[in-house]
Length: 373
Image (cartoon, rainbow, N blue to C red):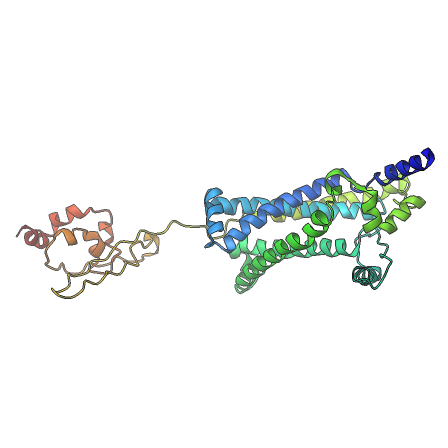
């Protein structure tokens, strides 16, 4: 009896064993990806849907639209730097350490997907044995690669539209905006539906945080890899130290040079300030409207559309129109609204731009005479 209990306890202990799946580098990569993606999603979607109540609240919480854009840009830089590191880190593992291309999709992934579908709907009693990365994880990985590529390229173009149009036609800018926005929605939905279900709901896979995975999860999702571990053929042995050194001497200088070129390009593109920033709205003043005759409804005056014209784009002085005699009463005390240099009704010269309303009648005697009656 004790022997049976002991064997049962031993079996339970064995099933509770954890297998090391990810190292520290992969876990740090995943954490930075999680952090940058979350911030990019929040700060990006509130800009795509700025009129939504939730968006307005988040933009205020983040300190305004300019702060929101700055946070979005900083997170984008983190994602770009992380992508550059990932490219050369994967290259190092493949070329120097001779690790297999376990993330490449193949025919077995198609048969595994069909086999799992049959198993889930009851047409098969045997769950397919899947390798280190199953077909679902490969789909998600390459979706991240594709999405990051689309978001990075379109983000570069939107960050510096003037610089972009020196190389590409202007039509690429609205196309990039559309691609950037819809790819962001697709990425968020993919994470919320696909990733959350498989990693957090179906069973909480903590391997990307702890580095280890339970034996039970290995049997369900990576049974073929578990068999290789038990047979002692996985992970594959490293090449001899001399061969690794020889490969590293060839790989590291070339990878370093390419990484420096990518970083310089990224720095140049992100510091070339050609994008249009948010400008404060120009002051809008009410144009003068004559009083309506008795018995008729009073019309609401239209707003003045050209109160502020930058002085640097004016190439000639605007000649003042003849002064019209009218009462300077309370309704028409704002002389600059109708007769300022940039107004449409009898505009004055440019050197009158800084004049105050109460000083106009000091020079314009007709208006002064009329006002004293």
